[in-house]
Length: 161
Image 1 (tube, rainbow, N blue to C red):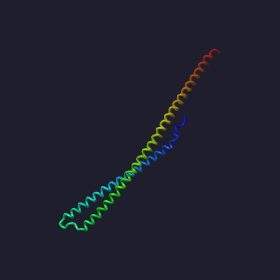
Image 2 (tube, rainbow, N blue to C red):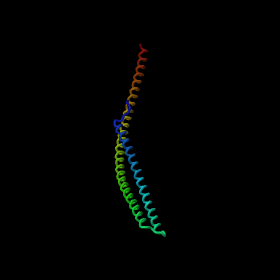
Image 3 (cartoon, rainbow, N blue to C red):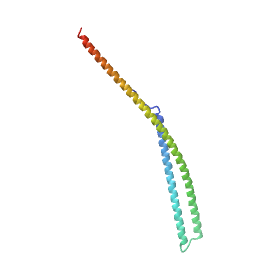
Image 4 (cartoon, rainbow, N blue to C red):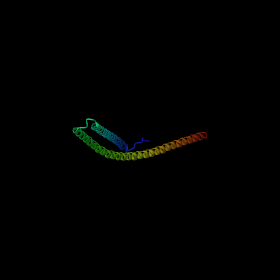
């Protein structure tokens, strides 16, 4: 019997490659999300440090000058804007990640159905191979019996002549 070949093997391989690529894309998005969240955390800590410095200046003997307040206010606003921008990036990445997860789920479902189909076809192939093997064994046994019977018949017939 000829070797088993699944006709949709190329499609299954293609879907597996697509799935791998989508997983890599998801990993990159997650990494980007992690970096953006870390940057937000860093900027918040910077704002806290800046506010503590300003309070320290205000509480000192010299006190804070109007220029110090102005610099503080501008820098604080700049940090707030950066944080807002990064939050928008994080929100956008969250949407992209959700879409990516849905695409991965769909591809996994498609590849799983192809793998199930392949297993089913392989099981059918094995069943047919077993039937063919059984038939070949039956034919061999029948041939041996016929040959054995003809030898016995020749031997008994040969004794009378």
